[in-house]
Length: 451
Image (cartoon, rainbow, N blue to C red; front, side, top):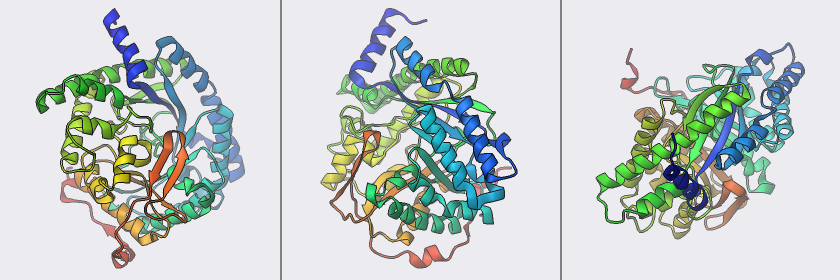
């Protein structure tokens, strides 16, 4: 039961510390939608999504009003479309556009699942599907795409890694009039999870039930405020405070998740307690790290601070709920975090340091702008490095990188809203061409043999 102190504390977290439910995401299985033709399948996909999620905007608005906690985004994730479109991969764009139309009809901000899982190999239909991603993302507004190229059990599919470097370049070119915006809706994963509620990487896994509600809770400002209250604490006490704060945030998320699932006639899936920043000051993971004692995020000590933060968040969340899932930890998207933006502009935060940080945080190299003339092979090499971190450490890693058309180091891209702005960061000029073009499979590490 909540007492008056809990109520007052929650009000303060919402009004002063940017606590919110970042997203309520409905996962929908599209497997029953497969028909004899792409046209029939697309019609069924549209009808199914619109019917299953018809009340998601209303229900989340009602819950936000009743509990006094902002619910920022309403989203849908679907079965990886490469599976649904396998019989007619050359016409998969019809399904992509049907999903985008459904998202507009529902009034949600993003719909994820225009995805392919090719971590061990690529069938011809999957290759055809992936090659169509740039034009589909260029011709849709709310559709998001992801491709899983590796796992700790299977290794890294370097043929897929090479292809995704080309796809990212093509996507940037296809949306060059918007600073390569299509790339902000495209994620390359290693160890992708089936219940991630956050975009752009959300999809509804084939192991999930028909309709599921997954909730992403975010509270960087709440954690920062808690650390500010104990400026002289040692690191053990600091970790304990972060853990207790994550516990409170997760309980709020579970309350919303269970009630939303009940009202929407879906199963309650998971609570993802990731600290997801926004460009607003006071809602930044980077500023948490600086409050812990760093002059600027990216300096020496950053990886250690982030590791402690990530671990404490997970411990607090697992104490609060038996349904913690998704990614759960701390996100470091450069364009979406004011502290990261400022550190990158100063030159303190660089690509190499970000890569090191991804070894201990929730995901990977996220929302990073690089020069528009960066080669496809260089992008593939960045993806390979990140996938290797995920594979060896048995964790999810990802790359969401924007080779900004016509932009050079020191320029900026600006997407507005939650996607924010990003300074164009330098990449190494030395080539990895021969390595990437070898192709084949990087074998899984020895610890994958656990059976």
